[in-house]
Length: 393
Image 1 (tube, rainbow, N blue to C red):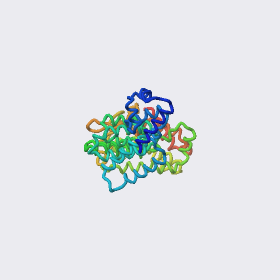
Image 2: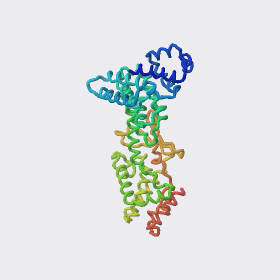
Image 3: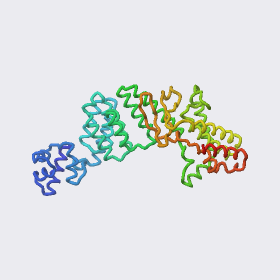
């Protein structure tokens, strides 16, 4: 039994250091009666275990007397009960809490305990402190990213709105995981029956997913690394196929759109950039007619884009998927957000879809090697002058 083992360990370690019960009690800031009780088979408060173990310079598992083989056997037996269909959710929570008392530093067990707590929402109020304790341990001591993210996920169900944002900010999530954060909020709102907020968050997440798809590799062709820069221009066939695919996606995106080229205002800038890359790649592939036709289209889109005022909130279209959200054009501060009618905003990392500049075409035509084969072509020279004029507006 764990109680007998911890009694043996405390008694052994105290005697090894030639300490009286009173001296040990003073060192641990507890009463001598508490130490006496422990050595007779009593069990210290779980919060004292790390302090006792640190004092004796042993692990908590060593303090409790759990060797690895015993712990492994116990965890297998626990798993058999935890995953069995013959026990209720409440019984599984009870099993997990009992095991946690015995193995308070086992992160696999903390993972299952957190899962059991959030699956017993009827009793969440009496287990919220335990869930927070497990979360704190996981975030400060555990290096396993799966366990850390699962802990954040579960806290999303019970944290206040401010606590949720704090949790997200302190996690290891990077900018590319804005989608995951949105999905966490969605689950939280459903669980708390906040359905209007759920629908709002779902619209934002749908938009972020769409942006992520459009924005993949978007900045690759502006790399300052020579090796990367050369590599990006080494596969014009692949680039042409990818950019034309995104163009077709945008063109078919909202059939009700009456704007020029059939796309909503918000996508005009990135559509123009996709066209620019496609034109260069097509020319590099020897498809001059297609390439120059795409370049002409590029100018139309850029000219339309630069007329839009910085920071303007632009329609994204397709309200069935995105609701009535809008996106602000980059305001030269690199701040782009998803805006809702109620004033709520959601940050997006994909700002490069909304910051195209009037000098982009001229820079591309003078720097990208895709245009090397047509530098003397009259059509190229005419377009180059047009690009220079646009850049100097």
